[in-house]
Image 1 (cartoon, rainbow, N blue to C red):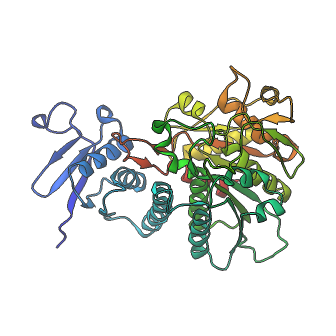
Image 2 (image 1 turned 180 degrees about the vertical axis):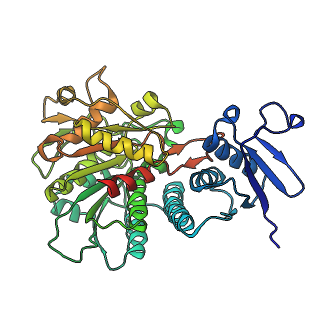
Image 3 (image 1 turned 60 degrees about the horizontal axis):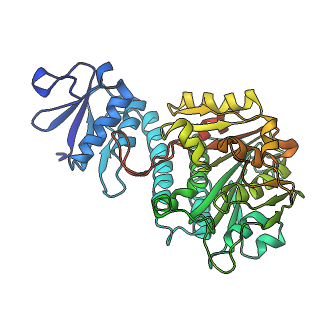
Length: 429
C-alpha cells in the first residue's frame, strides 16, 4: 500500500468552502488541483499546485485518476522539484510511451538543474566539462567521443578567449569538444553544432559585481548546462544526426594574473577584441566555441548563454530570448519552444548592431557604446566569430533559466527552461 499522497487533476472549480477560485482542495488522503481559467489554465495551475504541495512539506506524491496527460504530468514535476529536498513522484497510470518520455525529460532536467545549482567550489571548469561528457557518453556510449582542452593547451590550440577569462583562477579554463556521431562513419558531415557558455563563477573580474549581483553567479554556466541537457533529451528521443557540442568553461576571478580592462584578445579567426568591461566575459569565451563550430560548417549553429542583464530586463525571467540575423532560423527555434510548451521571444539583431561595438585599438570592443542595446550588441559581438558573420546561426540568451528566489511556479535556482526547445530544434531541423 502506497503512503504517497494521491493528487488528482480536476477541471471543475473547488467547492465554495475552499474559497473563491481555490487552486487546491483536500480529502482524507488526496489533494485535488482545480485547473480552471480562474486558476491559470491547466499547465500553470498544475505547476502552481505542485509548488504549494511542496511548500506544505508533502514529499511523496502519486498522480492519480484519469485527468493527467503527458504535459500536465511534466508540469507537475517541473513545479514539484525542490533542490533542498529529495521528494518522490510516481507518474500514475501513464502508458509506456509517456513513461519513456517523462523519464527522459526527468533525467536530462535533473542533470541541468542540479549541475547549475551546484556550488562553484565543486562545479569548476574542468568538472563541468567532465560531468557533461560523462552524462552524454552514458546515454550513447558507442556514438559519443570527446576531448577536453584545458590550461595552457587552450593557447596552443588558439582558444584565447577561454584562456584569458580563466587565467585569473588557479583552476584554468577548459573547452569540451564532444562529438555525437550515430552514423558510425567518421567522415560523416556534422549536421548541427551547439555552443554553451560555461562560466562556473562570475565575480565580474576587475569590473567587479556587487555582492547582490554576485550571489547567484554559480548559475552563469547555465548555457553549457542547457545545451548539454538539450542534446541528452534529443539522444534519448532517438536523434540520428551528427552533432558537435562545445562547452566554453572558465571562472572569472580577480588575481594578479587576471585579464584587465584595456587588454586585447586576438582570436584564432584573426578578429581582435578590446576589453572595456571584464564583466562582459561570456561573449569572450563563446567566441572560441563559435569559431570551432564554424570550422565544421554545419547547417545550423545554436549557442546558449546566460549572457546579458539587458535580455532579462526586456523579457523578464519567464521567457528565453532568441536572436538571429535570419528570420527563418530564428523562427525554427521559436517554433521549437511552442511545440515544447516553453516560452521564447525574439529580440532584435541587425547588421547595424555590428557598428555599435567600436574600438580605437582593436576591431571590436566587448561592450557597446553608451545607449546601445545590450542584448543586441552582445549578440553582434558573437556574430563576428560565426562563419560569414552569422550564416545559419541562432543565439539564445537564457533569460528564463534561473530564479534567484522561489515563486509560485518554480523553486529557487535552475529551472531547466530551454533544454526541451534545444532538443526539439535538433530533432526537427
